Length: 90
Image (spheres, rainbow, N blue to C red):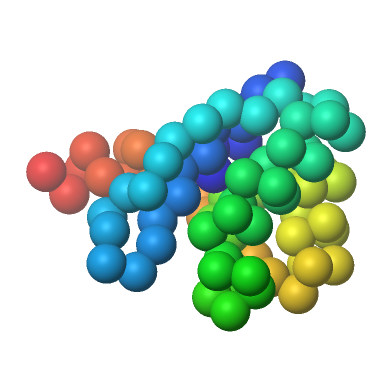
Protein backbone atom coordinates (compact mmCIF):
# COMPACT_ATOMS: atom_id res chain seq x y z
CA UNK A 1 0.00 0.00 0.00
CA UNK A 2 1.28 3.39 -1.00
CA UNK A 3 -0.01 5.60 1.81
CA UNK A 4 -1.09 9.12 0.96
CA UNK A 5 -2.64 11.95 2.91
CA UNK A 6 -6.09 11.77 1.32
CA UNK A 7 -5.93 8.56 -0.71
CA UNK A 8 -4.01 5.28 -0.67
CA UNK A 9 -2.97 3.10 -3.64
CA UNK A 10 -3.41 -0.62 -3.01
CA UNK A 11 -2.01 -3.59 -4.93
CA UNK A 12 -3.25 -7.09 -4.04
CA UNK A 13 -1.14 -10.15 -4.73
CA UNK A 14 -2.35 -13.71 -4.23
CA UNK A 15 -0.63 -17.11 -4.47
CA UNK A 16 -0.08 -18.08 -8.09
CA UNK A 17 -0.47 -14.52 -9.40
CA UNK A 18 1.93 -11.65 -9.32
CA UNK A 19 -0.81 -9.03 -9.11
CA UNK A 20 -4.49 -9.75 -8.61
CA UNK A 21 -5.72 -6.14 -8.68
CA UNK A 22 -4.91 -2.51 -7.96
CA UNK A 23 -7.25 0.12 -6.59
CA UNK A 24 -7.38 3.42 -4.69
CA UNK A 25 -9.11 4.02 -1.38
CA UNK A 26 -9.91 7.34 0.23
CA UNK A 27 -8.57 8.00 3.71
CA UNK A 28 -12.09 8.14 5.15
CA UNK A 29 -14.03 5.65 7.26
CA UNK A 30 -15.93 4.58 4.13
CA UNK A 31 -12.75 4.25 2.08
CA UNK A 32 -11.00 2.16 4.73
CA UNK A 33 -14.06 -0.08 5.05
CA UNK A 34 -13.96 -0.57 1.26
CA UNK A 35 -10.28 -1.53 1.54
CA UNK A 36 -11.08 -4.30 4.02
CA UNK A 37 -14.02 -5.57 1.98
CA UNK A 38 -11.94 -5.69 -1.19
CA UNK A 39 -8.99 -7.50 0.42
CA UNK A 40 -11.29 -9.99 2.15
CA UNK A 41 -12.64 -11.10 -1.24
CA UNK A 42 -9.23 -12.68 -1.87
CA UNK A 43 -8.95 -14.64 1.40
CA UNK A 44 -11.16 -17.55 0.30
CA UNK A 45 -13.47 -17.13 3.28
CA UNK A 46 -10.62 -16.42 5.66
CA UNK A 47 -8.59 -19.49 4.65
CA UNK A 48 -5.72 -17.48 3.18
CA UNK A 49 -3.59 -15.36 5.52
CA UNK A 50 -3.30 -11.64 4.86
CA UNK A 51 -0.17 -9.54 5.10
CA UNK A 52 -0.31 -5.79 4.55
CA UNK A 53 2.80 -3.88 3.57
CA UNK A 54 2.57 -0.12 3.89
CA UNK A 55 4.48 3.03 4.47
CA UNK A 56 4.23 4.45 7.94
CA UNK A 57 5.67 7.93 7.48
CA UNK A 58 4.19 11.02 9.19
CA UNK A 59 1.29 9.11 10.73
CA UNK A 60 -0.77 9.00 7.52
CA UNK A 61 -1.24 5.24 7.96
CA UNK A 62 -3.32 5.81 11.09
CA UNK A 63 -5.89 4.43 11.94
CA UNK A 64 -5.51 1.88 9.15
CA UNK A 65 -2.47 0.27 10.75
CA UNK A 66 -4.35 -0.43 14.00
CA UNK A 67 -7.39 -1.73 12.09
CA UNK A 68 -5.19 -4.16 10.13
CA UNK A 69 -3.71 -5.52 13.35
CA UNK A 70 -7.13 -5.75 15.01
CA UNK A 71 -8.18 -8.17 12.23
CA UNK A 72 -5.22 -10.39 13.04
CA UNK A 73 -3.50 -9.60 9.75
CA UNK A 74 0.28 -9.23 9.62
CA UNK A 75 1.54 -5.70 9.12
CA UNK A 76 4.88 -4.75 7.61
CA UNK A 77 6.18 -1.20 7.55
CA UNK A 78 8.44 -0.15 4.67
CA UNK A 79 10.56 2.95 4.53
CA UNK A 80 8.91 5.77 2.62
CA UNK A 81 12.08 6.42 0.61
CA UNK A 82 12.06 2.96 -0.94
CA UNK A 83 11.82 4.47 -4.43
CA UNK A 84 15.21 6.13 -3.93
CA UNK A 85 16.68 2.85 -2.69
CA UNK A 86 15.42 1.02 -5.78
CA UNK A 87 16.91 3.66 -8.07
CA UNK A 88 20.31 3.40 -6.41
CA UNK A 89 20.41 -0.39 -6.95
CA UNK A 90 20.21 0.24 -10.68
